[in-house]
Amino acid sequence: MERWQDKAEFKERIFYFSRELGIDIKLLSLRPMKNKWASCSTNGNLNFNTELLELDKEIGDYVIVHELLHFRVPNHGKLWKSLMMTYLGDYEKTERKLKTLQGKFDFRQCNKP
Image 1 (cartoon, rainbow, N blue to C red):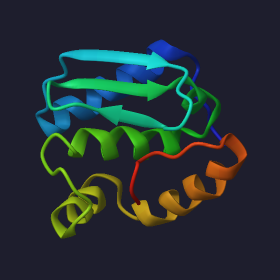
Image 2 (image 1 turned 30 degrees about the horizontal axis):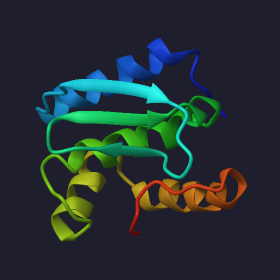
Image 3 (image 1 turned 180 degrees about the vertical axis):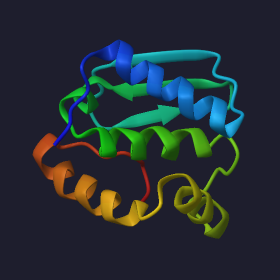
């Protein structure tokens, strides 16, 4: 398992994917969150839970791309799933890993699966 070195490396990865997806981030925050892995707003704000720094980079990439895609696709429908597959390949495998961690950390990535 390869973990993130620090916040700077995690943020660098966020900006990498934002460039790949053509997403303009207005405000980026990495902070403790009680019940989510991440969140985004229509204003271009992104928030990521600092607990992600303790997890495998593959899971971090999943959460990053997941949130960034919500700037383009607000739901988890066919288009969103297709884009996830385009950028991450077998993202569903990583999604399953993340779901096994939800009980351990007692929060969820999204309000709705």
